[in-house]
Length: 107
Image 1 (tube, rainbow, N blue to C red):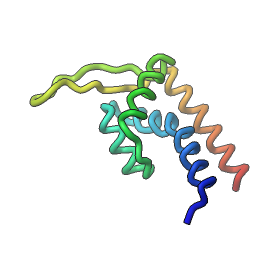
Image 2 (image 1 turned 120 degrees about the horizontal axis):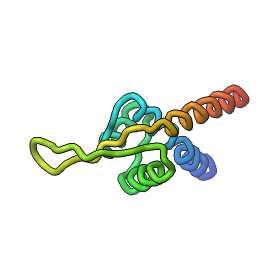
Image 3 (image 1 turned 90 degrees about the horizontal axis):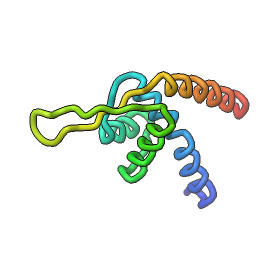
């Protein structure tokens, strides 16, 4: 059984790498918010709630990393699709280098 300390550390670690994972997904294709949540679960085994995802996406847009566009759907309401901007690509590369360096040091 995990100690409380490890559970808390794991939660904080996942929050810290969440922007890296979001950028890593969006760089491959435009995605809407709920699609990102599903992909984070599928590819990284991260359970992210909408109340975590949407504020993060808004912050990343304000920082100039992402942009969005509304796409009409055949049925239902339009979806907001997010794509990465050039600044986001640059930040993603820096994050990847940092993550690799940390991983090398820990291992």
